[in-house]
Image (tube, rainbow, N blue to C red):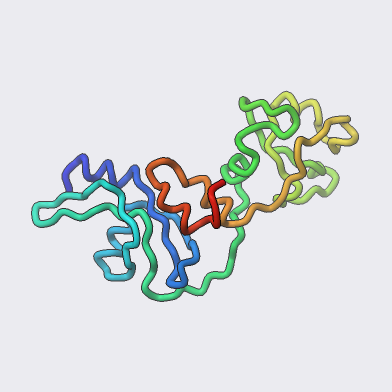
Length: 177
């Protein structure tokens, strides 16, 4: 059985999972990464400085792992959901840059057959969303700060690069951003 402080370290750390070809595939919990390690399905490339202790062993918590077998996965799409929209739009209204009372807005309203796509959805604060109503930004005389685009998977991974998993940068980006 793991000690309590080890369990909290496992729950607070994330692990970058690379395909056998070193292409980023997913982000998982460090607990899941350790399970894959003990099942002999991954190679650990980088570790955190933290350990997990059990009565019989002490294991470093993995930060970056590589699958031993290649998994067919050529999908660089990011799932369209509220959380990922907020990340893409930097948690701020795309009309006024407010960071409070955020909602999801259809640029072309659903009433006018506006689709649920990356290119038609943005984050807007409640006041701006109400002001725009069921009109397009042009009709409401409101200017979008930037044109919405579909993010790729590398942008998705970037959200996880924090101080404690700085080792991931070499696997995700060609240079520092």
